[in-house]
Image (cartoon, rainbow, N blue to C red):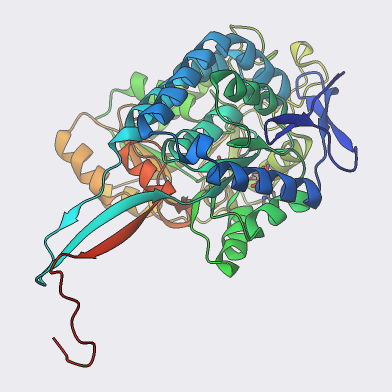
Length: 492
Ligand code: TXE
């Protein structure tokens, strides 16, 4: 068992109480490392360190170009360490090594991109309609940013927050999920190596209910950037509101992959399968509903089932495994519960439908790739986020009906459209209530393109040019250039 420490003010420390908790390997179903179990006092220490770093000349006095150079140096170190970090992610969260490796190899781009943006944060000169004044704006960092992240893509989702937050000149207290803290703590070492001043990035580990709320409500935290479940996100939003803190929230979804009768069916089959099974359904953008045009419904379903059946389930650390385990024990129960709910509501299960117990699954927390057909839009399996390898297939007759069903949930994170008609592609991309629409592709993301939710899927955008604005505040500066301060008792 490896024992980790947390990063506060540039030092690797234990918690004040000395407590730790075990983190488990979802494939083996066994603990493999001890993680510090922080309490309120540790949060206070981390916020104080971040606050001191924010004010220190070593960070605040750094030119924007030098700050950008630090981020780019970090990117290079991350690229060198990608394979090792990918292995740790897979050991701790059970996601496929192929996926974690791809994420880690792409991740440095966020630090290059936002490092490049650091010295392009510019204000404006405003042609004020009053004589004798000069008015300009400054874009300033907010202060201490609390980043709270989940277990499904631990380092990637943290990167979406850390890269713009640091480029904008903030300091950070990061609380990774209690199910995926090991990779975060290993990642933390790279900030030191890159030369970030102590306290600019702090990492506190522990449980949401024990330290998450303290972090969100802390008076010296200026902003909260959160990715997680929508109920937890709602609680974070309510708590942040009490101290009028801005938030960025990314809260998952119930995304629809819509297949029209003019689509290239074999491509659509691949897109729907990758949308739901590739990450074992444990992704906010999972295409967990397939809406299929009635004329091709039977043909599409049989092709889809045949293809999904070929998925190799097993050890996530093997290069050729295609479906890995569920990351956490509570999540395993949640997914199995939803399968039972779907059956009891009358959805027909045509693939999987239970815990996977094949020899290669060992004692791991596996669920068989599961497909329900003849799902009604009102069923819970079509409305609620399962976050597992469970697909709900719903037939539709017309484009109008497809839009109505796709938009008929509380979520709006993403949607996929499969068609060969450009009119349909453009029309659908306008009418779908989703922060991302993919046409003839699925799950594409980039550091250059904004990502975020409509409706209950969240607030704010991550990645792309607009993301940096989430970590800045605008100041208006007025300077009298008339040299003549007027008599205050005489109206101008
Ligand atoms: O997430 P939580 P959980 C969805 C998915 C999943 C469900 C629950 O449907 O089944 O959420 O997963 C911290 N104050 N998503 O329980 O609770 C927590 O410690 C402050 C969607 O793992 O949202 C962790 O660091 N923080 C999703 C983070 O919040 C609190 C990704 C996320 O945990 C807190 C993951 C509190 N009171 C799950 N309670 C996506 N959008 O991709 C917990 N936390």
